[in-house]
Image (cartoon, rainbow, N blue to C red):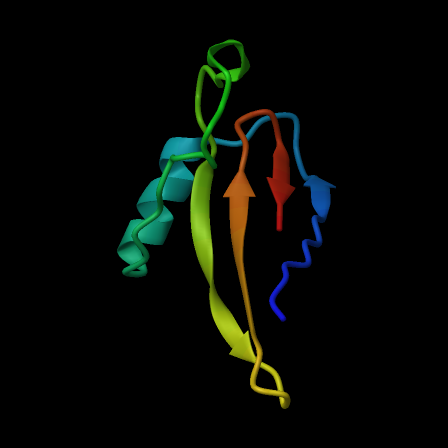
Length: 81
């Protein structure tokens, strides 16, 4: 049996976030941030500035299952995990 379980945490951290600064900080740490979103996305739901996506290292549970995640930084001051 397989399945997916999603948990989403949203944090309002500021009035705005400088995505270029976040991107350069992640790149200096050796992380390759992406700006893609999960497809398919309707044309009318696009971002003027797409979020910067940082992958989170996967975690192995005692049962052998793995948890994976990502952090998304949005220019309007929201961070989602």
